[in-house]
Length: 121
Image (cartoon, rainbow, N blue to C red; front, side, top):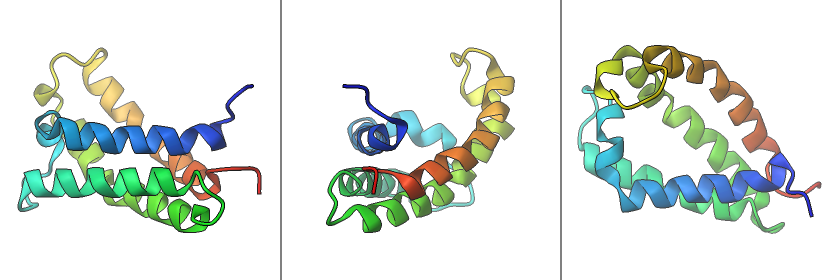
């Protein structure tokens, strides 16, 4: 059985949430300096990503999950901008700043996919 992008989104989002919760230090360099409580915000975003991802996988909670996932993608966008502005914090990333800048416009299709995530309803 082929997993469509709409069906794969929930596990992807939940997996990202687990990563945030399991290894918050990995995400710390992406945190904008103007935000307080970096560790707490990373853990909170991980928990929200996990809930959003799991919620998109069940018909009864899918609508909530879609909205929460889309809002989360918007909410973490400043971290993506921070990464593009400070590529020196990510020396092991292949492609460096080009990769980080290229990720920015990809957030729009990810946002749109979030709004359609789950089954084929």
